[in-house]
Length: 333
Image (cartoon, rainbow, N blue to C red; front, side):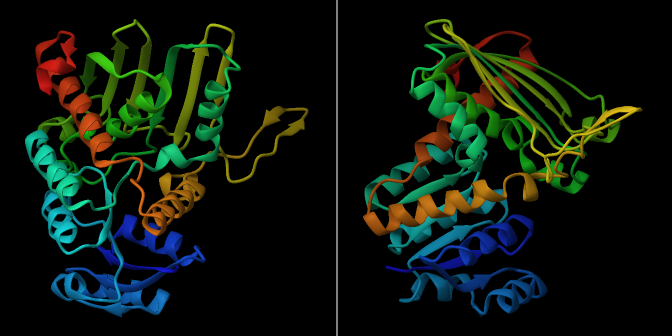
C-alpha cells in the first residue's frame, strides 16, 4: 500500500517533511496547501504534486494522511478537523500551547480512532536510538541519571519567538520528550532556571534564551537539561545516560567525521549547522514509522498523549522559573 499524503504548510519544516515523503517508497505527496502561494508552488514543483486548499484536501478521496506544519495556533483545530474526516495525521509539535486544549484535542483523536503521530523526531535519530537500545539491552544497568545538552547555533527571529510559546515550549519540549524516552519513568518534579544572556530583545519579548532544568522521578532518577539559543561552534546535540553498571553517550555529529593531526594539533570539521541537516535520518525514519502505522492501522508513537505530557513538563518548568521552586507535575496536570 502506498500512503498518499497532503502537506499543510510549506515552510522550513514542511520542506523537510516533503523531502522525507519523497524518499519513502511507500509514500507519495499528492497535494500541498499554504497561505503563501509561492511557498506552495515551490513544494509542488519539486514534488510533482497539486496545490489545493485545506477544504479540498479534507474532502479528497486520494488523500490518506496529512502532515501538519502550519502555525502552532492552528494545530489542534486541524487535528480535530482531519480526525473527523478520517485522515491519518502527523502533526509537528506542539498540538497546542494550552494544556486543556491539548486534552480536548487528544480526546477527539481517541473518539475517532484516528492515527496521530506528534513530531518528536529525535526519538528516531539513529544515535539516540542506539542509546535507548543499550538501555533496553541492560548493558548499563538500570538508568540513574540522564544529561541532555541541546543548544542552537543562534536565536530565531523575534517574530518567531513572540508566537512560539517560548523556549521551554518550543525548544526544551524536545528534550522533555527525550528525557521521558530515556528515563523509563515519568518525571514527577521539575525545577528550572532561565536567563536572558544572548539577546536583550528576547527578554523584552517575554522569553528567555538560556535554560537549565532538572527532572526527577518518584524513584529519584534524575535528568538535567542544558539549553541555549547560542552556540557559536554549531548545533550542539549530546546525550549521556548513567546506569548502575556503566554509561552510554551519543556525541555531537558532523557532516564529515574525520580528525586531522598536524604539528599544530588535532582538528575536526565543524558540527552540523542546524536541525535540517543534523536530523535528516531522523526525519526520514519518523515518516517511515508513521507510514507503517497507517498501513497497519496501529497506534503511532510518539502519540498525542506524548505531546500532552511533554507540554505539561514545559508548563511546569515555566512555573518553576517564575516561582523559583520545584513544581510537582501533578500541579499542572
